[in-house]
Image 1: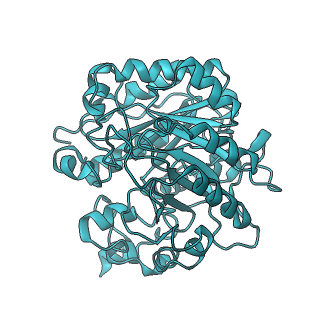
Image 2: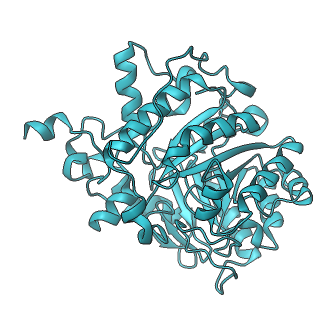
Image 3: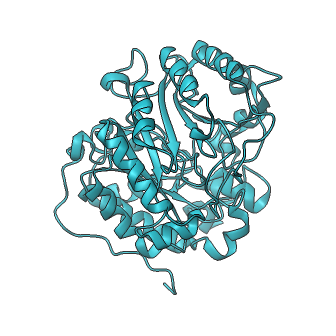
Length: 422
């Protein structure tokens, strides 16, 4: 496989699904999937197992996020970039984060008003991101207000500003899960990607401070050529540190990621091998594993389950068994620090503006969102793929490659049966 090396799958005894540490395992945990991946504060954890006091959306035990029961496309996760300001200089950042906050960010009162509107039509997991969300002096006020309105709140941080005092505040305002970026198993690898020496150790200190408060914490890793050789050690570190989950994010060429795409994007073939390895590890390790910005994983799961003669169920594999890959615009939305709404943080297509429409109106009527909710709108091999309704391909990578968010996913090695026949 040329110079791209991934660890070989383990053939050891598997942990029973859902019996992992703290009840997590592959499918039975209680975590949010706080997200953020590429950039200090965004990504998709897809909120698989979040719930207030062990429950999911109000009236829906079992951790299923979403809106009202009758909604065909409930808003399951809202990723909210509170600020683009950040203390790191990550070379792959979605947000093109900067050391100072910029003019035009939503005010505290505007944030409260958005939350007021949100709870009238949906009950998503709210992931507060950045930039670095702790850059906002009113961060805790916003989080506390969202919690008081009954929302399940998570946050995505680079971890370096999570002092003992801030960790206690995070707990006190009701944040249920925190994700911390971990882009290497060593300081050398992580710090080179994050742009600041010492960020690795600072992130791990932040992690420990959160765990001391009894908070649920996950690591998020953006996978690229620079750390592909360390992915096995990153997983080992996550398990040893007692993380509740590890979510891997496949690099999307957006923001700063555009500048490094040619040298850092792994090939479609390597991508495929990595996801098969991840599937094997998901059965072995005692923490929750999730592949994000990697919709192909939903195909891989089904292919492997068929080979193994097993049935994918919520009980055995969690929401990954009953949901689909790319949820951009159909279950997920992204709100920028200036009020722009996008299908996801990696897909720079404006679906609406909070200053002109309510969040509810944008979610329910945006042309971009409506188009993304129909798998039959997909083009190229994605459009004829037999797995399109469970995968859909990464709409952000399709857009980056073709300029069309309904186009073909460029980093997929699978050849659909109909595509081959034609």
